[in-house]
Length: 431
Image (tube, rainbow, N blue to C red; front, side, top):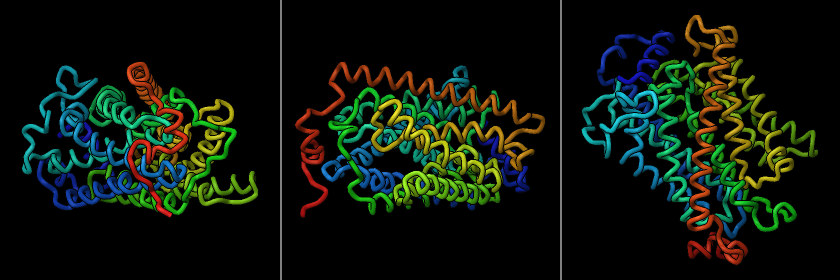
């Protein structure tokens, strides 16, 4: 059992789960069934959830191009996870353990249906984490759609998944140095949302704005598709959060409850702010607030109670709403689908606030006994800064290299005509 698994045993015992179930490396059928279900739920978030969400948010002429990117990146990163991602992220690295996993599971060598990781089949554990690994780079796509070459996005996300996602995953979930320091991340506020959000900001900045932005209005072409995609995300997110307990216990139930509450509060706060500022609540606003709430609660879902989830949902609504206007109006960056202000800022806010609301003082239980909320707050902030800096630095180098080698953007004519026809020989609608 790896160190992350041992931590989960401690959480389970703190919740009152029977220690005999998790003390030995014996298969637990109930936990296995729940993680198999959670794996399907998280895949639902990406395919079709993210594909529909992003597809509806872009202009008609770029709908297929976005969907192709989501499905292609999911497929590419899945293969990379099997080849090298899993072994670097979640195995014991021996001498490199603080920084990176080992090479014992390259191509999943030695993994059989009977191999266990804790009380789960290792293949189930591996497949569950694969879904996190594909969701993070797929998020990045939304920041620079409608103008960046398909080959560039494939090359960038593939390299990013190995050079950024795998190490940061190991640092926190593979028993690496941040986990040893005491930083915590229940379901990806740092590992997924902070890293992908920062990469998205770098990508949007280097790619430059879409032609005509911000003078020309570029509204979503189909909010019905977007709502369907957001619905898949809201349901599938429970695989993210409740599944991260890695067991079918009350810990998973509380994570599911806090996730739903955080998302609900985020949606209501965003709706209220939009109503007050612009005079009308919109569907897009409610959906964006809900997703912001999901991102903020992710790192804390299994560590906080309902009151903490409400507080973090409030922070999601106010913080991410303000971040969108700051990024677009103050900095002038065309982050097309608001990946950084919603996911990046949301993940950072949630990871930092986890240090507060996971403490017993605020009704939480994720901080070890004897560790103060202030100390944990400092650890969480440090972990966010480190993950953001690593993702930002590696993303910058990769994109500058690609820009020099092949160029990042499609031609002006291709951008004007739309990437569906120019790059993928199809149209989303034949009217």
